[in-house]
Image 1: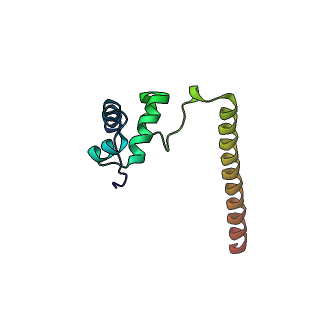
Image 2 (image 1 turned 60 degrees about the vertical axis):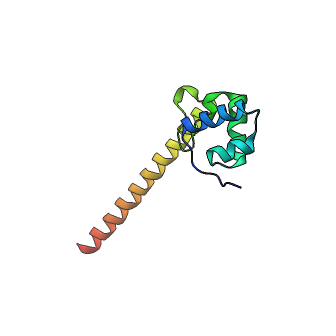
Image 3 (image 1 turned 90 degrees about the horizontal axis):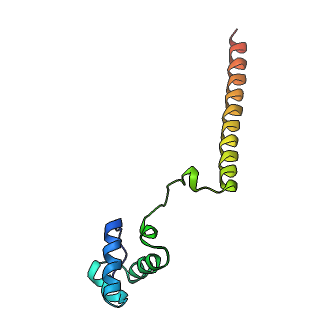
Length: 106
């Protein structure tokens, strides 16, 4: 049994085309392209259900503002505001500590 490996977008398309052309023979496809049976099956199922765009690897990438729902936009804004607030609080704490150190010196 072949273990999975990283594949490019073009390789995934090629794997799916081969698999479909060979009557969804996932084992043969996996052996031919040196990927796992599960990878060959997952790529084919993704392609058949959601099209070629589903084969793109979007992990770690942010959604564009246009594709976000209103709730997702608001959550992102809240996250940004919380980060800004935390940054401001850290800055205030730093300045207080700095003043305290300067008072001790003088």
